[in-house]
Amino acid sequence: MGKLLNVLVKLGKLLDKHGIGYIVIGSLADHLLGVSMVEPRDIDILVSGEDVGRLGSVIQQVRDIDILEPIRWREGGTVRGVYGRALLDGVPIDIMANIQLKYLGKWIFFTYERLHPCTIEAKINEMITVRIPCPEIQAIADKVLGRMERARALENLTGKKRCSVKINQCLTTIDR
Image (cartoon, rainbow, N blue to C red; front, side, top):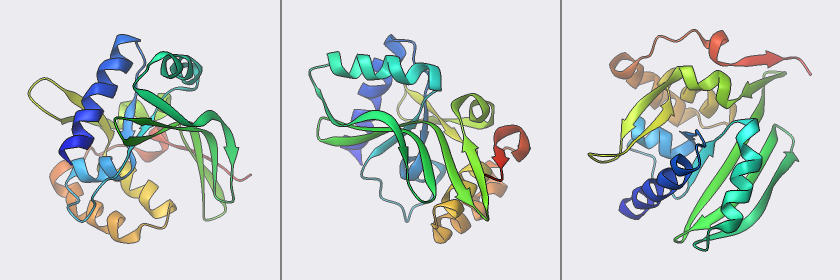
């Protein structure tokens, strides 16, 4: 976990230097929220649709980063959106923007702009903090992705770290 957090600090400094806002999501967000059963092996970040192109250019210029999958629109059965994958110091980084997850016949949009007000700060060390989704939002994402045990663990934590967000202000859904 130490190496992963060191890479997150390095990535955060790079993104901050270029003025690219990001939210840490996925297994690392679950772990930072206190779900101890999760042992993250990668870093998932959500950036704005406007910043994703600039981020792609920044990544291409950094010698320490290997591009595993170029950042582009991808579509699968229950997931669609802008996605790319890179490797920094041996740690995989999943880069996402405008992610849509299909759940109960509806598409749920996870965008940086809508999600940012529904985040909390997670302290990595004395000088570095990152933004992660409120537990209520992260639990929804885990449910959509079929990670029910993690979603239940997050729901149990919401009493301690609850944001009391209005879900419809953080996420948008459509039928198609």
